[in-house]
Length: 79
Image (cartoon, rainbow, N blue to C red; front, top):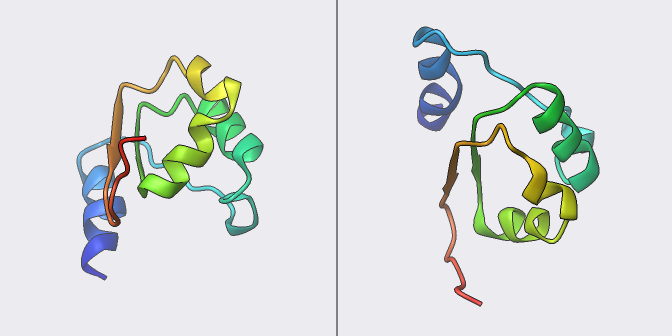
């Protein structure tokens, strides 16, 4: 529950729009990148393994709306 407050409720109370992806699409790079573009997402949090997977998609580098990219929750490899 504590992480939900920080990840979902705090931004809403701060006046930003929260974009949620369907659970069936959360591991689909294409679906996630499409939603980032469609919803004009500016800030996002990924665990490093998910970030690495998305970085392999050419479309990820075209996500011009992304201004803040946060990562954590597992060790991050430099390679």
